Each structure stands twice: as structure tokens, then as C-alpha cells.
Image (cartoon, rainbow, N blue to C red):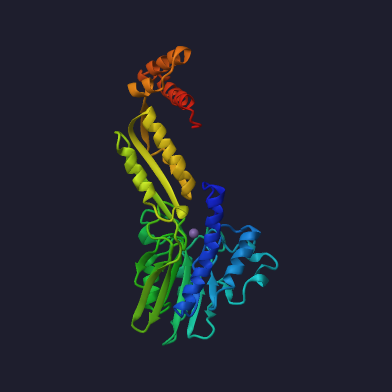
Length: 365
Ligand SMILES: [Mn+2]
């Protein structure tokens, strides 16, 4: 997944870290002696990812020492137009990697376990694919383990939605009760989400957005005779932070600076800031300098228009400190008068004052 709003350098770091996450999961799987790994859909962000992305992903998948099962989700649906179908693609998959291209049972080599996938055949399926895949099965043999792998929204989390592809939580519970599966691994939500004891979303291994509450994880799932134990483990280190500051008053900028300075691992932190309050021209200039500096340090620094309501007012200190004379001083007085008024031009005059201040103090911004 590319994040277009990031500067190029951060975008490259983000792309690298996504590939590195594949290797991190492989390491965890080896260290924790996992029998196999499932990826519950949206392995890729598109049905036609860049060749470079595919080659790098396949290379990273080579690092697995246990079988890996990939499920096509909505973003990378198993349609004839997708890369999954392209000639030569499957030949290049590492030997331990299996694509769950239909709903047939797949035996995991070396252990008494099987996997059933419910791949998305298109972007808009018209039914609950996971429940349907499970309901056509016979119960699991005693002592065996069966992991179902599905993708999409679950109805219990979205009671108002009517999409035909929503996964029915109650149908899944019935299937689990009838021993049609031991555990259901779900994908689509980017945060770790427990639906029930044996139904979980693992979330995205690398955080992707501000709205996520528990991303950067993978799940270690232990299925035993006494039930299922699920343990989230850390994979990624990206954070998306949102904060709003009232910058009225002299000391308020130090609060903003303390917040920005306190962010650890800045090159993997994406920050969105909102500002409210009233500031002078000079305070506003200091704020802009501060943001400029941290824009260079953070992976991305965005300003939220929705959260911002910042009024810039030229105060007397602003006007006298510029030490202008002649024509420039009269332009300053004229602009200050318009900026202080209520006309449609007040905002434009304030912008002009900020520009004049920059020019007069020799600052480039
Ligand atoms: Mn999805």
C-alpha cells in the first residue's frame, strides 16, 4: 500500500518496512515454532501491483521456514484480470507459499491440520463467502485442527450495513459449534479485533491510517483440546498521531514543541495537527518555523483543516517591531487597518501582513 501524502523519502521507507514486515512475521513464526502462517486477504493493495512490489514480496516470502497460505481479499481479488492469474506468476511463488484460490480444503504438510480459504473472486461478491465455505464441509476429524481464512466486514461490528458480502457472526459461531472449523482468521480491519474466542482479525502488520487503534501486529494462535489462545505480537513500528492545540497566549508554542520533541522514532511517525486560537504575526511565524523543522524530522506532518480555526491578528508589537519607514510603513498601516476590520478583505490583508513581515525580517517563509 502506498501512502501518497508522504514525502518521497518516507514513502520509500514505508514501502521497505512493509516488505520487512513479511520477514519479521517469518522470524516470529520460526522463533515461536508456528506450524504455518495464514494471511487473511489484501496481501497486496491492488489486483495489479507493481512488478517491483511483487518481486520484493516474493523475495521476502522466501524467508519463511513454514508453509504460508495467502488469501485474495477485496483489494487483490482472485479475478481473471488479477496478477494471481498472470502467466508465470504462480511459478515464481516460493515453494512454501500456497494461494487459497478456491474453497477446497488444503492439508498442511507435517501436521494434523487443514486450511480452508474463502477468497474474494471479485471486488463485489454477493454473499457471506466464509460461512458458505464452512457450511459445505463435514466436521473436523477428532484431534484435527481446521483454520478458516476469510476476508471482509462482520455484521456484528456494522449493524447498520446491509452489504450482501458481510460475514455473519452468528453463522460463524454456529459453524464453530458444529466443529466445521477450529478458528476463523479474518482480514480487512487494520486493527487487532476479537469477534469471539475463536474469531479474530489480526489487523495490518504495519499501521496505515489515523483511525486504527491497534495495528502493527500479527497474531500467534494456539489451537488445543482446551480451546484457542490468541496472542498479539508486535511487527511494525509506524504510528499515526492526531492532536489539536489551542495556541492562544505566549507559552502555547512550547506545548506544541514539547509534543513534537517527545515523539520517538520520528521517521516512522505520521502526525496530523490542528490549531485553534488567536495568535500574533510573530507567534504565527514561530509556529510556522517550528512546523517546518518537524516536517523534516517526521515521516509526514499534515495540518488538519477540519480541526483548525486559527486567527492571525497583527498586534502593536508586530507592527512596531518591523521598524519600517516611508512607503513600506504606510503600506503596513493600511494593511493593519483592513486586517483589523470585518470586510471580506481582512483575511487577505492578514496574509499580506504575514508576507510583509517575512520580507521585512529577511525570512524565506
Ligand atoms: Mn479488505
